[in-house]
Length: 482
Image: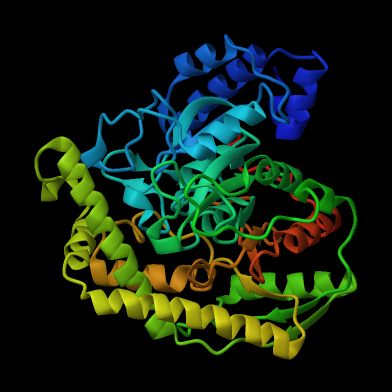
């Protein structure tokens, strides 16, 4: 199918539904493109076409994405019978024994699984580089990161392998790769998406799952097909009044948006990100919205410390679980150096610090909502990344810890706040830098909109308006296999 990449996932499903193309033809097209992209940007941790063919041999049903090929991230989301390594040498050879709840919902929607996209070890950094799978490269500039931790998903979508791919976000890991690769990415509210079946939240509620996509409507329709409570849910986000896909049919009401320039840790956008903010604010004003520079006052140091302790404790538990499964201790040489340090820290964090961390996250959520209330704001606008995509190696878990830590903290400083608050946020591809020698078409720098808890509907409505006003799906990077 030569024009495969001209369609988004909804468009491909329509072709199947009207019998203009067979699901097997779509699978062959995706596999051919996956192999081409893998050679150039290394975005897949595994391809498993045999599982896809087995799935096609059974009835696909009449789900909204019936027959559309799809890839999940090599982190936490299991496809029965497929490799799942968490980006770690310690999990090499691990095969999923059952589907994750999210996978089951994707199957019901008709998606066909044929591969897993790369992730850094345990999703612990904002680049997708690992000892196990190597460096995933950005299709816009192969010397730079595709973001992390869903960098494989973003790279394969940006390069034209798929119109959308599954992703996850514990500190920006959907939005950062979307921002680096010129895609749309939505981080849902806490409790919106299923994380089971074994657990119903990740990283004490910091992490969630969804997707990156070229079109907004694919993103909305994927959330329609998968959101909602699961077995054992302790809480769940309020259900939407109507399907998210329906929100794209009309412009939102006039909004008041706070331009939140300086992150809680003091990081400010560089000249490229600032140019994106300025252009985005101007576009919003042209569309009838009001943009006012204002920001909530948060304790960035306390939030950074809280996130480090909470994530480290969870990493330690994850490594201990793997040790139990292996029947031996995970060795230091089976983990990335910074991962090993975090796991070691996680075993020594006093219990009182975890309680303080949770308190800090709740305080941030209260401060944010009170800020929106006081100013009459509907949402905030920030740069998803404070500078263009970094060079490969700078953000890796094998880099010098001090240098890497400072680079990570300043690269996407607004992103983790929304994980800590549990609020939704989206990255919209509204800005590209001027061309450079290694990026002749420029580099994407996404713009992030953050909303109140449970406000995905309003965010999707604005995203649809922005997509109509400043379309981006026609932009294709130098590495394009579509």
